[in-house]
Amino acid sequence: MNWATVPELDGPPILAIESSCDETAAAVVTGTRQIRSSVVHSQVAMHARFGGVVPELASRSHIMAIDPVVRAALEQASIGVDDLSAIVVTSGPGLAGALLVGIEYAKGLGLASDLPVVGVNHLRGHLLAAHAEVDEGFSPLEWPFVGLVVSGGHTSLVHCTAPDEIAALGRTLDDAAGEAFDKVAKLLGLEYPGGARIDRLADSGRRDALAMPRPMLRHAGLDFSFSGLKTWVAQHIEKHGVPEAEALADLCASFREAVCDTLITRALRACRQTGTRRLVITGGVASNSRLRSMALERSAAAGVRVSVPPRWLCTDNAAMIGICGYAEAISRVGHGFVGGDLDASPSWPPSMKIAPTRSVHVR
Ligand code: KG4
Ligand code: ZN
Image (tube, rainbow, N blue to C red; front, top):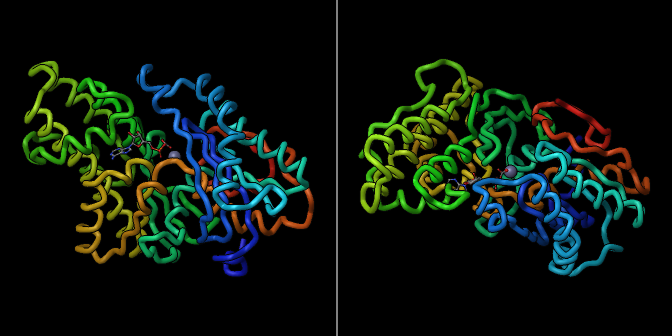
């Protein structure tokens, strides 16, 4: 797909839908860099009392929320369904039932309105969020770059040589970084999802208060492992009890430092190994304040240009899905409804080169 021939700005509007986990989201995008509206309905409060996402509840909640969320996105962009040229929807990876709600809604709307429907890889969406033109005056992506996607479900290092050419470099062998934040938060008695809460508490703590391990850093290669770090915290709590006040802030700061150090060290190693001087960091954990500041400091020192989207584009949203799928969607305009066979691909890795409009099961 040649992105150069597709409008970056002021192109035909497309609708983007995201429902892969616990956010129901819709957006209107009018170019590979232009977001006209973005609406996110979070289910976090509903899942909080269970300490994690309950797949069945997530699917049900998506069913309830999807139509109002899509209507709100169209309204915010001041357009109607008749103005749309195409629909893109996350088709994987994610929870099968949750993905299907978005996919079936997109297909229903596509069939009724004679629009093409295109499936988008959620992790590619996270990466290409960094291409969007946003208030902060973000510059466009330049290829090749190393991408670090860090979220509740994924911790992946990839090498992107073109918008649709992504090669896997490394991934977590156990917990994702966000999952590690959430599990440690649970050990500390903090509400799910605890990543942002640990981040806030850490701001008043000392980063070097506790000598936490840096998992896998002595190993060559680009994989991650965070479960040992979580076990370290569990054993510390077993010995000393759940910390409070200053000791809690110190533990949060030391833990945050260990995770961020591990992520940035690996990401810069990937840049060195691939000879790439551009790094994109995205996904929910990329909204971590220490990860953002450490990325800037250490990338500058290593001669690498780092790009981290604003927080609202790092956590799950449909605007990133629209940016990612725009070129593919535009190439299908004029053929009426296509994509009727699109199916959920719960474990679709970002590096798989597969035509999004074909139904693919990768297990
Ligand atoms: O990308 P995202 O919204 O959803 C997934 O695709 O997983 O990421 C959610 C994850 C959660 O684990 C949450 O705790 C974590 O991102 N997170 C953070 C912060 N904000 C969200 N982790 C660390 N620091 C933060 N400020
Ligand atoms: Zn995500």
